[in-house]
Amino acid sequence: MLQYILLGLLNYAPMTGYELKSIIDESTTHFWHAYHSQIYTMLRKLEGDGLLTSESDDADDKLNRRVYHLTDAGHAALLAWQGQPLTELPAIKDDLLVRLFFSGLRDRADVIDELRVQKLLHQRKLEYYEALAGELIARRVHSKGGAGIDLTSEARYWMATLRFGEQYERMYIAWLESVIAELEVTG
Amino acid sequence: MLQYILLGLLNYAPMTGYELKSIIDESTTHFWHAYHSQIYTMLRKLEGDGLLTSESDDADDKLNRRVYHLTDAGHAALLAWQGQPLTELPAIKDDLLVRLFFSGLRDRADVIDELRVQKLLHQRKLEYYEALAGELIARRVHSKGGAGIDLTSEARYWMATLRFGEQYERMYIAWLESVIAELEVTG
DNA sequence: TTCATCATGTAACGGGTTACATGATTAT
DNA sequence: ATAATCATGTAACCCGTTACATGATGAA
Image 1: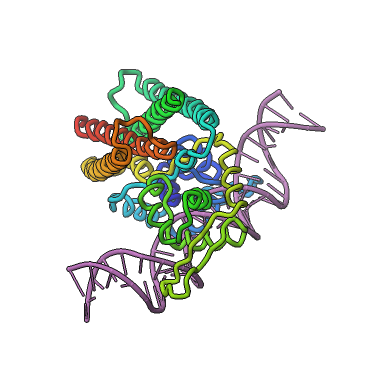
Image 2: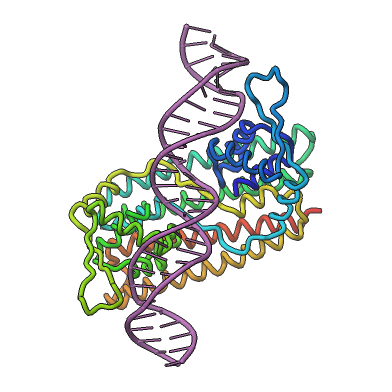
């Protein structure tokens, strides 16, 4: 999956690995994160496969910046991936649910404490998403000066993933509250 | 994480790898799945670490069934894991969100088709969860013959993870519907 | 007898995670 | 000066995934 994220971002503009990492950390990281060690390794691999080219431009650039560009083959690979729609459900892996599943042995108070910490973390994440959505909208208003009609097609999809994040966090918080309430009330 | 699932299940009763796999496929698989190749390998490892013992009982058992038991050290490891509460958010990895994020280049109709397929899959999953919840409740009613008051502490937590699954699917379906609606309406 | 299910393993490969490693530039 | 940030890599380890491999039992 990481390879398609890199191809997808480089389709917007040529970039260095560092820039790719920064953009990922502000966007896809919420549904697909990656370490810089993975990114640099994958960029070299994609270059080897002919999907990218790189230039370590300017002899006077002592930072060894390496700028990657999408090749025609890379663009084709991106389109090919998009042409094969997902027909399965993405799997969930969630440590907290595993822990909760086996919590029959634990002190109820300890379980409640852990759930309360999770609730706080999810509330913070929700606030972060809401701030991000606000920025995206502000940027659009600023560049267009009008009411919210003409999102570019990219921004429309970015907003959709952000709304997912918000609704996911709201669902998670509501669920945590219901579990906490049930554990608190019953003897 | 798999190791704690195995320790947690063997805390209920001694079992074979095959039985563990079957139980996982009906319970934790919704938030943590595992292949049989992983399970058998991990069981051997945990035995090597002294957390489990195994007996390939009965010389007349030609199926080579190997029954695993939790040791005292294994029980202690389970409690130690439970004693260190989660203080981070479990990461999300979701292919569909990656695909949607980069869908600006695609035909809107293709995107809508893919989202509709996802909606169907999530609806099926939701129905599956609802059926499972019904079974859990029926089993409780049957064993107690009365109104829903005395879930064992285990069943209470199992139901909580099931409710998570239901609410997750409902949130996902509602979100898909909103994205589909937005894509259908706008030119 | 043949198929589904029971039952247990190994091997190869790929991807994720942590740690190691180095050095330049910019702001305080 | 010194810390934060920019910038790029390698290596070891662990885990997940797919495929290979074998054989017994029970039901149709």
